Length: 104
Image (cartoon, rainbow, N blue to C red; front, side):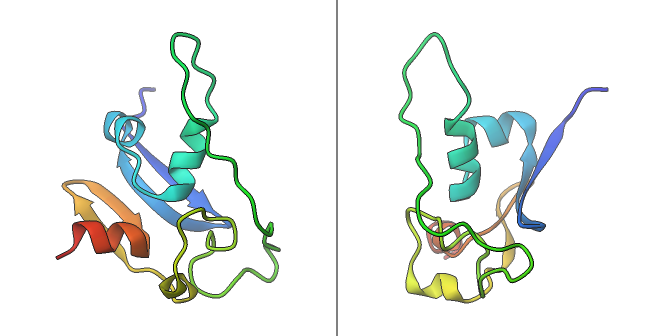
């Protein structure tokens, strides 16, 4: 079976959905970016995103964006649950930062 699209979840919440090529070439959600930065690549060096902050308890997740306690670009608005929206054709994401950049 060939995978044509990928869904990224964090603490059971959808954070990003896109076609495989689109997702790997242009990840939008900070969690997806961190995940992909951890993939070893032999032919080139790539800056890894090191997740810091508090690891949330899945039984009692943080209010708002579930990734906000570990996100390197979190803002105050991340204390509110982000909307799920189509940032680009067939590329869906739930992130206040991305929404501010793509939804005008």
